[in-house]
Figure 1 (tube, rainbow, N blue to C red):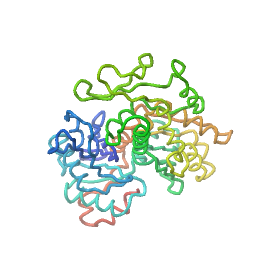
Figure 2 (cartoon, rainbow, N blue to C red):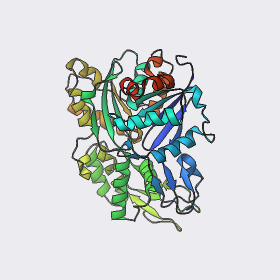
Figure 3 (cartoon, helix red, strand yellow):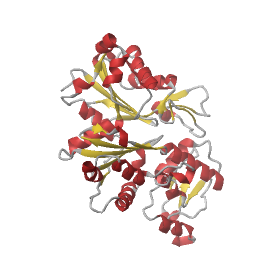
Figure 4 (tube, one colour):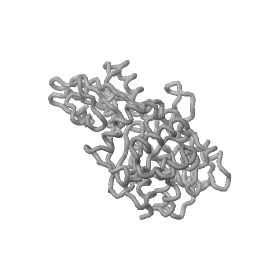
Length: 399
């Protein structure tokens, strides 16, 4: 072991936190929010306590992150108290090094707040603040030791970052951000379903499940559009989604194609998902559909690579790594590949890697990093912090 104390890795995302000791095989995934339900007014549910709630219609979310940055510290501290406390990990702070992730170009004030809270309130032994993409790149290089470069496409809850790494170092001038993430997709789905079928503006939780269960990325957009216009048996895209009623049906589910009739059985409520299935993830490729005047992921990948030195460009094209929750959409990888292939110069090979679990990929990178010989040089211990103050942390942690 490179670090002489236990290491706890916390990939602190805006939607979920992926957390666990570096020795664990898999992290625990906890929603990074406090939720209140209409059925139980008095009790706030912190993190994954929401699984205990019987009726989750009309959930009210209190989120620590706004637009991708950690701004609501009271909420975040409650979630962390729960995570670090006896109910979940029961951390001995004085004997634990914390590796925690934060967004690219995080504001200095947020960095200072975070360092102060972790050292002075929780009193961790030592700390490393780092970008989640850097951890992903670290793991990618460990698994592909011959490659010197990789391009991390991190598509999360608040936005999508495209970041070139050369020998594990990020090129700041070539980082691109698209302000579309999972939250925008869920909100867009709520908008169009509310407009076309059923008022679901309050049902963020359920609509998020609908998105995860039935949406996919279209690889032939015009073709899928024309299929979705057809009637009856010719339409192979349409599906009925049965909504939960919290008495009989605890979680919504998709009806298979042969049972998709558009008519509810018994007392069910259904939503018909037709072109919504691929129109929603399409926002990642054409953000202008919701009035965000930015380029889509494939175009931004090419734009980012063109901002790097010419000699590394072919290496970046053949090491594109997809991480983050949106990478879980079916055919996401295929679509990114085909679009980037169309934009890229013919001479270059294009290769896109999708990990088995794109959500926890960065966390595993963190647990690998803690075993690295370089790790002790990267961290700041509580003692160093007390001697040198905040400036040491701001110099040492390159975010």
